[in-house]
Image 1 (cartoon, helix red, strand yellow):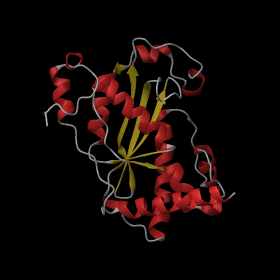
Image 2 (tube, helix red, strand yellow):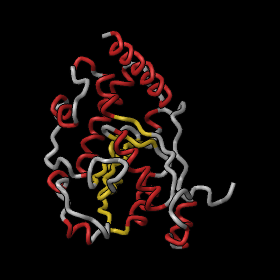
Image 3 (cartoon, rainbow, N blue to C red):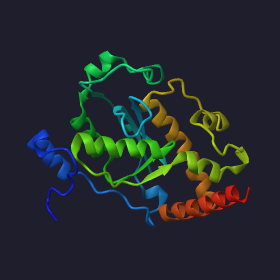
Image 4 (cartoon, rainbow, N blue to C red):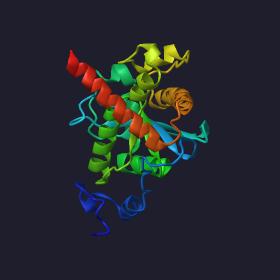
Length: 238
């Protein structure tokens, strides 16, 4: 395989030599294997974007915190606004509140995403409604770096109703679960604040998982697969 096999779409000439070298040296992902939850580097990520279309919209802001040794590492956080030359103001600004002046002062998208992936390291990502963040990050890395994302994601929005069925929140939002767990977030739709809120929820979910004998990444993966099949069977029976 070519040493530049990680490149997908972005032309080589669009990246500097230093950026190409950094891409080639990015850490490999953590597998969902027999690693203990407490020994896993979990990077809780939240993205603010130009919109909700995963085929068209772009990443504007990345916020992330690390869960390590069953604690949120407040000394290990990432927050960055990306520069977008062709950024147009849309109604999404009413949600994320990122002013055009902030975008104009942002970090070059390729450098920002390289910094973020360096920060993430060998990890499993956690997000709330992770499918969106995963697809947006995959698309952003492909378009801005030509890099193929292989990291695994855990969806806190899926784990929560599985582990706390008594909450009766099968489609619960981040706000719903914050209220249920009596958590407070005064800066909703700020990437860093939402990542921290999700991390707080994830710690509660990890504690419940252990109480149910789910000690390893592979245990969570297996239980989630069973839970999905059961849920689909129930839906199909109606």
